[in-house]
Image (cartoon, rainbow, N blue to C red; front, side, top):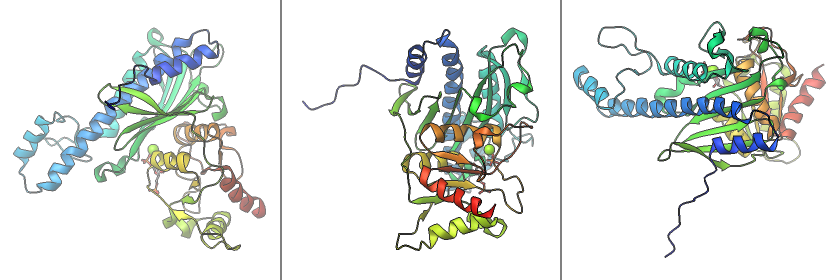
Amino acid sequence: TTEEQPSTDLATLTREVLAEQFRLGAAVAGDLTLLLNAIQVTSKFIATNVRKARLINLWVMLFPVVDNFTQTLLKLFLKIKSIGLAGETNATGDEQKKLDVLSNDIMVNALRSSGKTAVLVSEELEEAIIIEDRLKGKYCVVFDPLDGSSNIDAGVNIGTIFGIYRIQEGSAGSISDVLRPGSEMVAAGYTMYGSSANLVLTTGHGVNGYTLDNALGEFILTHPNIKIPPRGKIYSFNEGNSLYFHEPVKRYLESIKYPSNGKSPYSSRYIGSMVADVHRTLLYGGIFGYPDDKKSKKGKLRLLYEAFPMAFLTEQAGGIATTGRKRILNITPTDIHERTAVFLGSKEDVQDLIKFYEEED
Ligand code: AHM
Ligand code: MG
């Protein structure tokens, strides 16, 4: 028969990371692997709950008239009683935990108990968490547990973004271990929750993409060695902010929409979910941008757990990530929740944009 045999040689994320560490002759190959395992578990948990929340939304949309009692039964049946849709209140009138808060909690717990972390920074938490001595390890993880969460109810892709530093020599773990340039990160990645869950990771030796096999509960290598095409055909900006954009950005956008030399104009794609917009940019090429402008003086995206990880991945895939004036990974943060302008993607496209900034200066 022509029936395909199942593979007996599974390239799981854990196996690939371990293999890479051994190749590099790392003394403690297991450490980063264990840490990434905690991130994988979190991703699986969030993926499951995003799916459940969507299912419930679908039901409520199909049967908008179902009474509260039926909705409660439905949730009990789907075991998402404690998840809650965005902004929903439970029976006693308390606001239930939203999925982003829940995702944050599960991530903090998994990372803390891995015994491999010293400092955690989350978009959801005002302050950094310094891990108690008993569980202290050598890594610091900065993350946005559920980015683009305003998109959940519409079923649009959302994701978890993370970056990992090793604590500095002699440090017991403090905020200064994460207020360092992105170029000092040892690993970074994201998980995108869409029709499937995709985890894209770099440990500084290229970029690999994994897809969650739901039956196995494992992330399997499906996109080895991702490279951004040197030039793309897509631009991805929130052009609704054009009124506030600075001149270099306006001129650049004009140049790709009304090209002179007989070239075709670029296509526009903007999801409004950074993970999804960057994922497409990594695979298809082109440019993603969230500029600083007259209204958002420092831009919108966060340096530590949005811009740095995506910049690291982009460079590792052969692209460029810049603020327009400088390399993102060279910035030294002064605040854990600091914002920055972001432009990233295909080398030639981002270079074109940089030229407009150079002309301005
Ligand atoms: P969030 O952290 O509040 O979810 O905001 C971050 C998101 C990014 O995923 C996305 O790139 C950007 O905000 C979209 O912003 P806008 O709606 O202003 O275009
Ligand atoms: Mg965010």
